[in-house]
Every structure is written in structure tokens, then in C-alpha cells.
Length: 209
Image 1 (cartoon, helix red, strand yellow):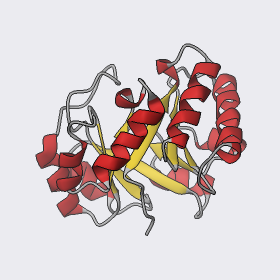
Image 2: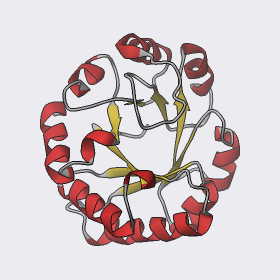
Image 3: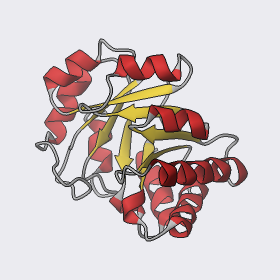
């Protein structure tokens, strides 16, 4: 079974004005101790996504404080392979976990998003290495988010699976500890890492140690 770090930063291309701004944030987040990053880009432009992904791969190898920063591609198994990423994360409306597993093979990590107990129970039967549950709190990172599950949703998900559990949705330094206490192994964060990324990452790790 894989071991997730407490902090799971999601690098959403839509939050940055250009590649330079995004890579600066990534360098700072990695400098703050992050060893796992997910790249998310909902633009659908495969060429741009691949360019971004390859730059993140280069940065993760060149600037990491730790020997290896694991990179996860949101949605696109094909681009994950092309960019040399370490895994893929898919949602309920994407390719099934088993279809993705056939593409990426047994070694790369595979994550799968869930939003209610029924989905968690079904996802537990798949070859996904970890499950995400959310949104835990109200979030502005998705245009049409699923209903908020709250801390009780995290507790219920924890009772339904032994797979590592990532909580996502509206998680900040102010509420992250309560999410871990509810049963999550890791917290996925977008917005609360955007301002002073290195300092924010360091504070998350201090809170969640």
C-alpha cells in the first residue's frame, strides 16, 4: 500500500497567468517540503498541457529538496506517460480506474475521486491506489462542485475503505487538522497555497505533523 504525504498540492493551471508564474509557485511549494504534486488543467489543450507537464517534470528533478517529487496528472493518462509523470488521478466522469490502469501499468500511482459513500464503496473494489473524498468544505476551485460532504463524509469514507484517503475541497490551514482527525491520510490543497506558496506549505506541514 502506498504512503501519502500529509499535504497534496494541486497545481491548477487556471490559477496562474502564465507558465513562469506557475513554475515559480511549484519551486516554492517543493522548497516548502512537498513531495507529491498534481497538475490539473481543464483547458483541454493537449499541447499546452504537455509543455507544462514536461517543465514540471524538469523542475521536480532539478530543484527538489528531497530525492524525488512524485507528479500526478489529472485526467490524462496519455499525457502522464508522455511527460514521464508518476501517476494519474481521475474523476467519476473520466475513464474508469481499470481503463486507466491498463494504460499506465501497475507501477504508476492511480487516484480516483469520490463524492458519497456509494462511490467510495465501489471505488474500494478498483485497482486505484488511493481515493479522494470531497468536497469536504465549500470550494471555489470547481465551477460545478458536488455537494459538500463535511467532516462526517470523511469519517464515513474512512469506514468504507482501507485505501489511503485524500480529502479535497475548501481545505485551509485553519481546518486541515480537523480533516486529518476525521480520518484522511492527506489533504489536497489549491487556493491556500497560492499566496506565499513556500511559507504556506511549511505551515501546512507544521500543522499536520
